[in-house]
Length: 387
Image (cartoon, rainbow, N blue to C red; front, side, top):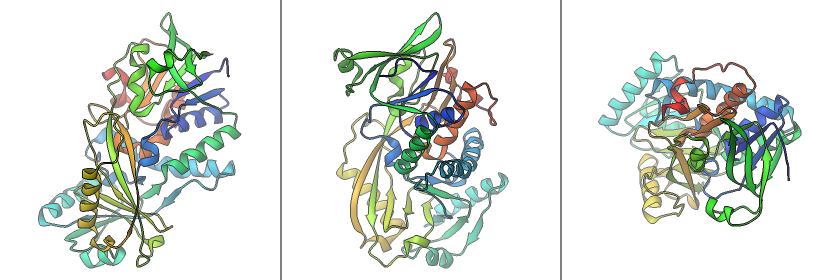
């Protein structure tokens, strides 16, 4: 067991792992602690990186941050490859945004005007061009093509970032954090239970607690981040939104290696992966709590909306359903920054359904804050003190 370090990062999803990696790169002694809880949003996300077409695109603060986050990915990939990590799960690919009705076409036209004002690169496609680009589509009313999009496999890139971090000195620990220790308004470390456990109460009664002394702690616990609010005297109103996402296998009639990502203004999407896998998603289920079950209604909803968008996928093979608990905040914006009144405490959570877009850059920004650098983007809208 590690007894002392400079920084402890709580949470091994893409946000926490990226934070730990960027700190280790800077030579900061860092321990990443994660207890491997099921239903992590990172492994269950579709991985679409396209700020102009995101469900959060209307918020200017979110959009400005997301543009920087998308631009951060190529630099991150180069750094991973420098560490010998080639299986990173990231690929640049265009995205189609399509409308299937007159009402949806009006929404798409408004999206086009907004994206154009923000300087996003796009082009209009005829319905025939859209259906030729993704042959499973039918009944397209209008379409836009965004050439600067990308996709990323959350589990693959997180594993790659973690391996690169270890090669630069990062220590990883499979354990559950029971609590954050503070004294005189400053962080002094964490208490961990190496035996793990599903709840903090169970961990406290396990009798196997150990301390890690540290002057700085980062809470990046995804949907479970609110557990640490009381330790820091801070409201962390992060709640889980259940997302069910379906993985199909192509029937061979689609050359998925060259297919674009497809999204509709009704907010469902299809992500082809070039290995025969096609992802269709997703539900957004408020009020399900930490119930990570696959449900009949959820699967039906995903397939119904997916096949409405692309009827040509009807003969694809049903492979699996993944379920993730997305960490949402009351205002839909992430919570990123220093904790007020507790020196050395930082938070990076609340990314909702856009964690794979924002996660690596959020980690880079937190690393900048911890090392005294000024972030390249305004974080005021994401300040933990707003709650």
